[in-house]
Image (tube, rainbow, N blue to C red):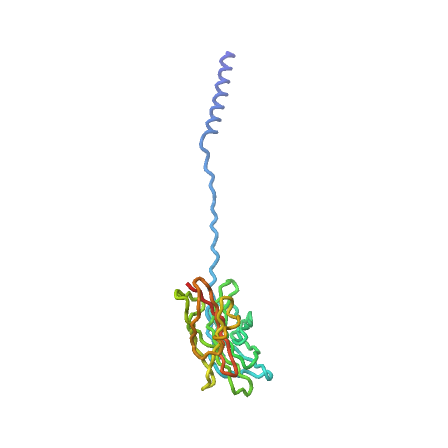
Length: 250
């Protein structure tokens, strides 16, 4: 009787171990992972482009509001652009090539005091708070006349070729620079000085490139190089400069 009891207990123990081993070797239930989907950030539209209003482009005798013998207040105005929180007004003295920027303007006009007897270019940059994207307006230019002034400085020359950033074929080792002059005073003869170099367009011009009356100039170039140039326009009394343009030779 005792032997039968021992056998029964032994069988029970074997059954328990067998079930445990089967449970351990069996497949376990897969773990369910909950994937969280992030909500994409809303896209902020790029600010729109402003249309310039005043001073009018190429105005030859803009007088502004006299401040003193050598300065006048100029009121710049432009249209409100879409998706825009503020504007930067950039004004460049075209003779000294110095630019001043008025930032954070929240209206569509701004009065700035400038030195008279100079040509200026200006543009408006539209900006928005939640994006680094900006949009530039067109660039306009005008001449700020002094009180009682009789002779006006010529406008900066208009660059025709090569345009800034252009890639130019220089396989023959030479290319032609070309531009166009414009003077508010009728009947005056304009002359040009061409600043051309491989550094910054501000180096001293070659003697042969000073006070020429043609509106084109052939220059020597080498493939793979970047060149810089600008034009000084003179009417014999006053002068003006273009911005520095650059191009690369294929």
